[in-house]
Image (cartoon, rainbow, N blue to C red; front, top):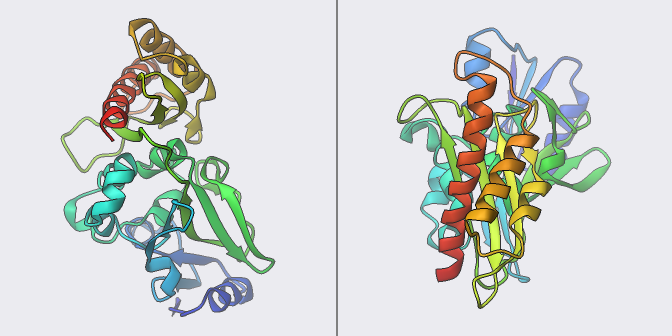
Length: 287
């Protein structure tokens, strides 16, 4: 195995394109190293992107959005007071990945590109309307996070491409988000269901915009537009909560496995979507 740690995006791309065997990008390594030790993958080349400066930065954009490098760790996000205030759901989702020790290494880029439908940070990023900036041999392009994952371990990235950073859009006034998951244990487990909700309210407390995302209930993390439409124009009264739950459940296409049955996952998806929406609403009203 060959290990390289380039300091520029262009060098990383050249390495990824130039290898004749399988190449893997290392952002945090918390999934890749486990897969290598378990003989699930055996790459000929590992390209560590942590020495590329822009992959390690969190910056507030001039227009009000936030750019997060693909190799910024969950622990670093948690320690960023301003980001926690503006995007609490994204930060709390990143800090549900593994243990405290794992969060010191795990990254948003790695969590997305591992290609797991149960990834914790991905529903929160999708609910936030995040865009992934991808670099490759043809230059750079932006992809909505909900379009990056095509299925389990399948990504919409071509040979030589890797995620450099994520852009979280500017926040309107009275906006916030939340992420919740269900796991069998209290921590360090894979999500049976995850739900991310981001919303904006007007001065009267009426929801004027919303995004809802569900994880671990389909072959890919879902953006559930019908669930968002069910609560826009409401103050999340009981009738709106019922519509949200129904829309969330309708969107699910889960599998049976040792962590949960189909029926259980569908039921829990509605409950978590409602609870996350209530938390996001309370945060938005006081933001």
